[in-house]
Image (cartoon, rainbow, N blue to C red; front, side, top):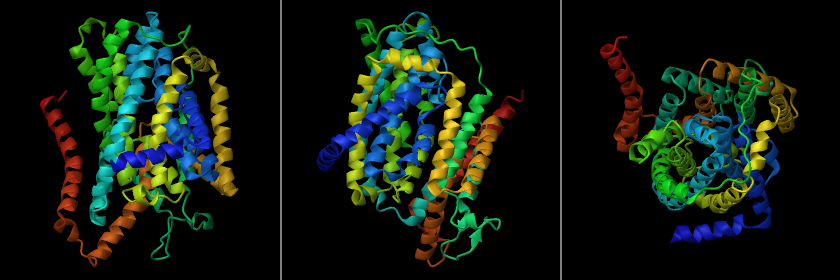
Length: 497
């Protein structure tokens, strides 16, 4: 009941004319960048961080939420019409949706993706409304040592999940942690990793790191693989479904939602696993299994619902524990820190207007996205015809101007270029970028919590063993590090080839 009262207050905030305008701008921008191949919601939010620095926090996060959900909606258009998944969670949509489009059923594929995203996003937001405050109440009682262990668990699981190699993920994480340590230690006053440069005494602005690794690095990588020949399937009329399409889609929407939300809410869950699970489940349950691989509508409906439900689930650990479980969530965490806010259980008390305004805007944004995506599908499809070189040049210029505007510092531009090259090399050699971003953003928090735990125990490291929750979480960290490696070694012995 208390959650409903708070949600009504959030609607009062989100429905103000100015915030409605920011929500509309957010969902429009999110759909636009989601449609454009190679540009996802994480990159867009990163690009807009410098621009929104002057906005009120509530308005900025309502816009970011619109971009987040809009990017999910728009990504399906690219997957279906261009057969180019913007992110790994859209691979299944590209597989089945593009086959449907080539059979002349592009409108049905786009409609089931959009409506499924709306239903999954709305149900996911309802679950977020009721689960997040309850989890926040529990999180308040967690001691500093256990919070530090929880961040360690997130570090390990996310590093092992993103990318094809856990070792590369851990290297990426340690790179981010090292960058996060640059600057003056606030307790001892010692300079760390500043190489004698006074510009580094205050640390490296995480916006510069995020834009360099994500925006510049990703743009250079995508541009280096640019090919002129593209087969874009033309779409005539809006997205629509027949009665038979509705009959075959509604159950996959609900099953995909049930799979997506819990996976999004746990560290290292993400959107990839539930989309693949949803596809496998629908293939087994379908009365038309022969259509899978040739363009089955259930193969689009279920995974798209799972993808969008996981987006709502990702916000649960982010808002209640301050833990990002996806690339976009890591950028959103950086955005919170830009405003001097630390997501966590106290955020529901200290910034209730912001939290509940953000949650209410998710309901509003979902409705806006449905209205934008169904009738205007042909308009979004035409964006795929924009020459890519114009797009890449625009991103580079926008990134450079945005970073320079933060401090009017040429040194920041050199840092931006350096991180851009590092980001490109990481993508080129298959090092995941997300663990590095999470290391930069969460590294200082982990250090602060570790010091607090030691101060509370008068420097006694045994505190981590005597606190049951801390010991349990550290055991989980050890298991996450050892078990996957042991399983791989065992598999190689059983199958030496």
